[in-house]
Length: 228
Image (cartoon, rainbow, N blue to C red):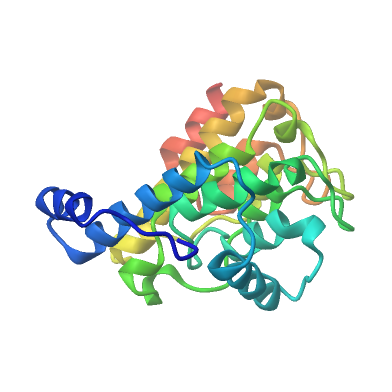
């Protein structure tokens, strides 16, 4: 990363424990990011700046002060997601933006919990990794951020519940994986702020379990929200 050199022996060691080229590249990326994060010098120029430029172009927001908001908007559930090591890299250098509201009163967490317009089943398997998205949510979700309302008075939980996925038995594997990821995010948010179960969505006027039912969440998820 950023024209850094890595040991050939280390790469060979990674190859012996990986069964596919995708796994090899991912392990190398993890090692590259790990080395960058242990380096005290700032990471500027080269590939890092190019990645930031792509993010800004993709979202139409060229303000460095809201880079994590743009990244979260790109990394919405169901859309292409950057690998977790790269997400961690951006978080490391811009973590001060986690609690910053944009013009819509939204934090990066609000955007990350919205659903992408792209259908998961139509994506190449390598473009979406539920674990990567889940890692990003957990980086952004803190005791403070889960309690922040946007300009409409909506919590991150309300955004997560209002962007449900219609999943049937015939749905693609990717769609079902999305459903599990979405419901895990809801479970994590509720654990961090249990009182949110009693707070109605100011837009729909529905309680969380009602919102889940209206948004095609699974029966087990709806039941858990009801009995919690």
